[in-house]
Image 1 (tube, rainbow over the protein chains, first blue to last red):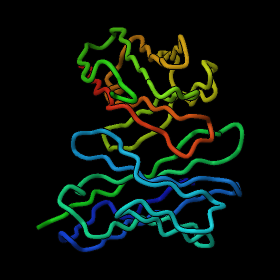
Image 2 (image 1 turned 135 degrees about the vertical axis):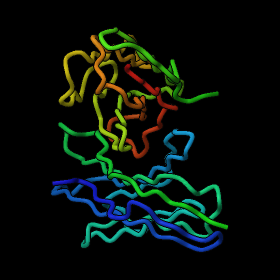
Image 3 (image 1 turned 135 degrees about the horizontal axis):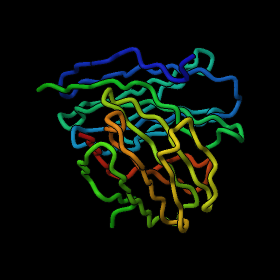
Length: 117
Length: 113
């Protein structure tokens, strides 16, 4: 079974609008971390936001927020007030807390976000 | 200052050759990783090292051998390159194994002809 599922291969949003990128995860480990990374066309991987499984509040970083719904095993990324520079591939990832796999990030297939004027 | 750097950025080579990719981090982190991103953009871990000790060795052909001379460096050597090795290879580092953030290098684009 896939650890991370991103069901939206592509998303389009108009500048200044908000957009939600979906991510669901699968783990039986009570301790885990969820991450979002941005990969622009230049290719680098840029860390955006992190949510720990025991965190009570949803993580926020500037215009990025993570809508963490533990019971649903979802960790959607919300980008508010989209900008043209947000156009990129977005990856959801998970790190489990168990010793043998500690540190390993499992990535989803990514969502290509296009922001139009 | 670049936090995680990789050289070279681009690597074009013939099948059967041996090549190395170097990675250095100046963040003082204990843990370093190699990831492979295939042509469909799927990222998968290959190796991780913690304090120069191999921690994760994913199902990777023996032709791939990582080497960590010190905590700040993790190199990847590939023997007998094959067409299917063409990909982008990312190095990453984190303060500890269970750190909240892994910082990625800019990637090395390997093309095997």
